[in-house]
Length: 275
Image 1 (cartoon, one colour):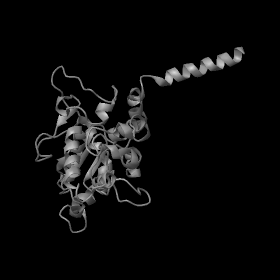
Image 2 (tube, rainbow, N blue to C red):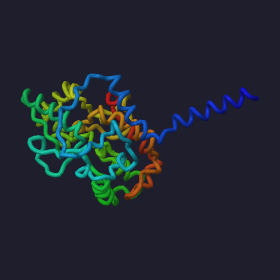
Image 3 (cartoon, rainbow, N blue to C red):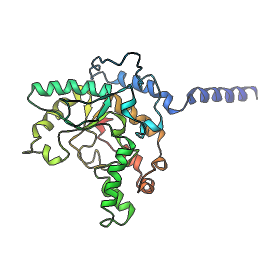
Image 4 (cartoon, rainbow, N blue to C red):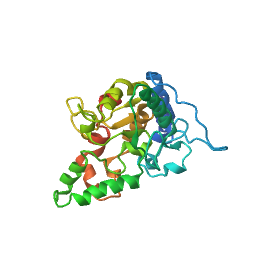
């Protein structure tokens, strides 16, 4: 009897230790584990913050559902930085500082090789993704009256709000938003060849690769979309731990998320090399 009680007490203690403050509390450890098992990525270049500002780093703090779903203002966070010329021609774009530092290194290396990298899309908030999604939802209504079929059509290239990697400040779209531009004879062919050969050196990977036996479902191929893995990988791990399909809500067509399996088939349905 005494031995049985001792066993139950041990199990309870272990449970409480592992419980911590929820999955978000593990974020720093996830980053450390990821860094320990890689080591092929260069450290971010040094950056400067305004006097007195504190970096709200994911390596020292927790991520919550609002962060994972893009429900924050990047411009107001110390751990995000504005993307300016010569890295983009568009205003009001932001990235995590670590992502931008690594991109700057990659941009400089590409330029030495005669390749111009240009960011055309960076961090997108929940509301920005909602505007993209609902614009397509309304536009495709007559062609796809069935809600699930319409959602699947949009999901070929656009994520549901709350389920986009662009929320995290880790992902960039480069140069063009058409695969044909990066194919043989396309105006960005040399860009894609360079990225395939060198982007991994700077921590970047193409999450939406060709759909084949290694990646049978999810979004269609996007040759323009690149993720900064030292941040994106642990964030995806957190996302898959925390999020459920029924938490994807707040926009037209959200009711289809559960029947489609948006977390399993789309959020997790990335290039195996990017995990």
